[in-house]
Image 1: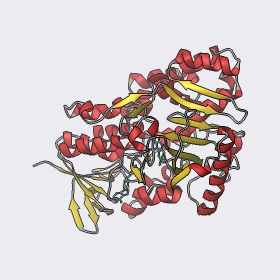
Image 2 (image 1 turned 90 degrees about the horizontal axis):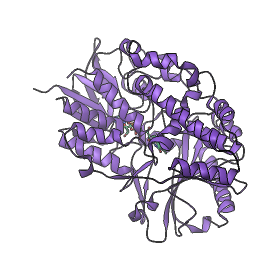
Image 3 (image 1 turned 180 degrees about the vertical axis):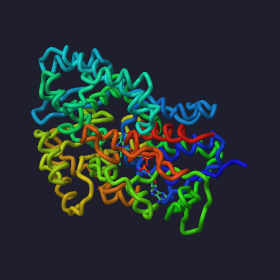
Image 4 (image 1 turned 90 degrees about the vertical axis):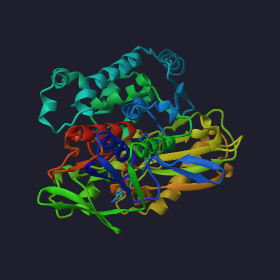
Amino acid sequence: MAKEAIVIGSGIAGIAAAIRLALKGYAVSVFEANEYPGGKLTTIQLGNYRFDAGPSLFTLPYLVDELFELAGKNPRDYFSYRQLEMLCHYFYEDGTVLHAYADREKFLQEVENKLRIDPLPLKEYLEHSTYIFERTRHSFLEKSLHKFSTYISSDILKTVSSMRKLHLFESMHEVNQKSLNHPKLVQLFDRFATYNGSNPYKAPGVLNSIPHLEFGIGSYFPMEGMHQITMACKQLAEESGVKFHFGERVQNIRISGKKVTGIETAKGFYPAELVISNCDVKQSYRQLIPQQKAPKKTLEQEPSSSALIFYWGMKQSFPELDVHNIFFSEDYQNEFKAIFEEKTVCDDPTVYIHISSKVVAADAPQGTENWFVMVNVPGDQGQDWEKLRSNVRKQVIQKISRILQTDIESLIEEEDYLDPLRISERTNSFAGALYGASSNDRMAAFFRHPNFSRINGLYFSGGSVHPGGGIPLCLLSAKITTDLIPD
Ligand code: FAD
């Protein structure tokens, strides 16, 4: 008889962990509080417009493909994606527009033409980003940082021996300022701290590996939108024998002595030898195992930022915009100070506009566009979100209208929003954090909760535990977790 395993939550890491466990021979059940799969990686429909509700940037797609290959299937029978030739359109208040081409030579040429600077420092910076990524991926991203075996591998020796070049003791911003020869480029590369909800003025320079994901490996987009990642993986899970229980919130994890025995929902007790919680780790300790001693230091780490998102069905299309667009604030340092110190939003926040209908024509009626408009904000600490949302909406509309020289408010024909309260309500994310803990401390990677626990049979997988948030790291989290579990 196959051993019973339970996964709490059908976020992308929950589904990936369920697939991997099923392929190891476990009888796997996933319990999901929502009536739908995917957690943050879900979709919403407003009239004739479809939106990806959360993630919009898809990097390291091979990590999704790997799940299908592991099951002996062709990933292309389930889901397809294409590589984007244009990574992002960057708009600055002084009218400068930088097109970040995926093609390295074209991007360097663009920077030389538009900023009138020597592109060599940028070329070297991007090469160094690749170097940091390659030096750190095996030790920091692909293995448990909490197992002795990780520290006796040859990878870790290589990492330690190149410590100085990894910029662990400088902030991302300090390194960017030293390495790049134009403030607009410094701001552009500081922005990569937001890819895991952190502050570039605090996060260690080792995170300057993140640009390599886009500029080195590439940015991709699923042919039917980001939500297709969830749906394809759910289909693979079901074909691998995983059973989903939607609309069934887990109320607690039952433990006897030092061993997991199962979970409880409103419908009763479900026995299991193994439980993987894909629920935010802080909430797991608070809600599911309140009787267990929580690792205080780990859970007290500064949370990552959250987001305020407006979903706008726009009755016009904008050729000057691409799939990913950034409208920078004039004072970036002040923006991060507001988010992480003052726990509010500054008067001129950076605005991200994602338009999936540029790739997926069916996402918006012809001649229109589906705008996902996002501003980084602090996590919920009881702020007046209604007031903040109304202020930010006004500022965003003014900023975009000014830069695009179009009255955009009159073009909005469908509208909804997501804020930290809704993110927390819909995904059980502590304070609505997008990526679990931030990386604002240079030791953050080591303080993140491990993928296992002191309780026999209880594991964790997802954006709030090692190696961190974002789709690729969540997929790696599922792999690290299930690799720790015997067949
Ligand atoms: P989550 O998506 O957090 O899901 C957890 C699931 O567990 C939820 O479905 C929840 O209902 C369920 N659950 C919780 N508690 C219980 C319980 N007690 N019982 C049953 N079920 C429970 N990442 C990128 O890679 N690229 C991006 O562009 C990007 N942009 C983002 C933009 C936004 C607005 C947001 C919100 C996130 C973004 N992210 C992005 C981050 C990314 O979405 C997350 O890191 C990732 O999806 C988290 O997956 P997860 O597996 O940790 O679970």
